Image 1 (cartoon, rainbow over the protein chains, first blue to last red):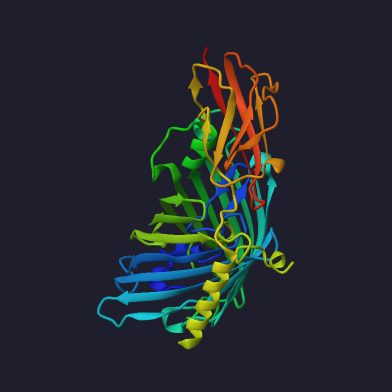
Image 2 (cartoon, chains in turn brown, orange; image 1 turned 180 degrees about the vertical axis):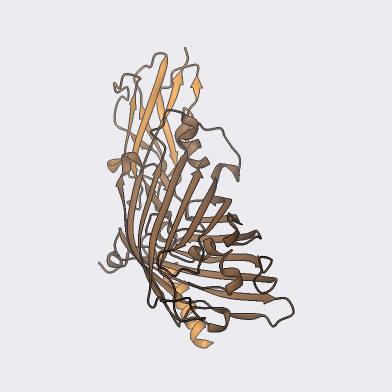
Length: 309
Length: 121
C-alpha cells in the first residue's frame, strides 16, 4: 500500500493509517476522542478540515531528502445511530531536493462501520468495519496505488474506571486491527505497481483524559486550555501478511495532545519512527475536526435515516 | 466555479436552517465540587451541564458509603436555566458520598457519570 512518495511511505506508516475513518465516540461516562493515526471505535457525523501530515525522508537511503506534506480530508456520515460511512482522500505535496515538486491526490478510501457502546456502565465500546481503498483513483506520479485493497477491521475502546487507584481512572485505551487484502498481490518480488502484499495493520492509543479527571475524579479547577486536554500516545504497526514480503514491518509512535471541546477538537502529535524500517526522521500530524452531530444534531449531523423520518 | 459557489450556498443554508445546538450534555461543574472535601453538609447537589437537560428523563442519585440513598426528592432544573440540575439531600453526616447522574439532553442525547465528595465534620 504505497500512498505517499515511496521514500516517505515507510516513515508515514502511521500517517497512512491516519487517512482511514476517524470518528469520536461517547460511551457511558467516557468520550473517546478522534485519534490521529488510527481510527477510534465510534461512528459519528463529523468532518476533518483538515489533517496535515508532514514527514521528511531520504536520510534512510531512499531518494531525496524529501519533504512530504499530506493534506487530508474526511467526511463521516451515519446511516443509523450505530452504522456509518467515512470518505477519505488527501492531497500530497512531495518536495525532493534538486527535483521538481510532485503533487496529486491519493486513492479514495471509503469505510463502512458498525460501532456501539456495548456497556455504558463500564465505558466499553466495540466496532466492526470494512475499509476499502479504491486503486487508480489517485495520482500515479506521487505514488498513489494502482491496486486497491479491502480491510476487515475490528475496533475497541475501554477505560480504566474499575482500577482502584483514582489517578489511573482517566486512562483509556483504544485500538484497531485490520487485515488488508490486496486486489492483486504478487507471487514474487515485484516491480513497481505489479501488486501489493496483504498486510496486517494495527494501532493502539493510550489516553489520559483531563476532562474525565475533572468531571469524575477531582475538580482541580484547571484553567483553559488544560481543562480540556487529552495527552496521549498512539502506536501504529504494519506488517506484511503474505510472502514474499518485501515490505518490512514498521512501528511508529505518536505522542501528542488533543484539545477536546463539545463540538470540535484540535490535535497535534509527533510521528516518531520506532524501528529502522519506519525511517529515521520525526514528522508531525495536526488535525482540526468538527463534530457535526453535536453541532447540528437535528440537521446535517443527524443519522441519514432519521433526517428523512 | 459557479457550481462550487452554488453548492457552498446550499450547504450553508442547510446548516443555518438546522441551527446550531450542542447534543451531548457533559458535566461542566458541580456543587459540592467533584472529589472535594467540605466542612458543612450540603443541602443539595447542583450539577451544571454544558447544555440543557430534560428533567423528566434525567436523574441524580446520591449514595452514602454503604450504598444507601441520601437524596431526598425529585431532581429538578433551575428556573430559567435548564443546564443546572439539582437534587435535595437528607441531612448528611460525616462520610464519603457518591453522586450518580444520568441525563438526557434537550437534544435527546444521553450521558452519564459519577463522582465522590466527602463531608468532613
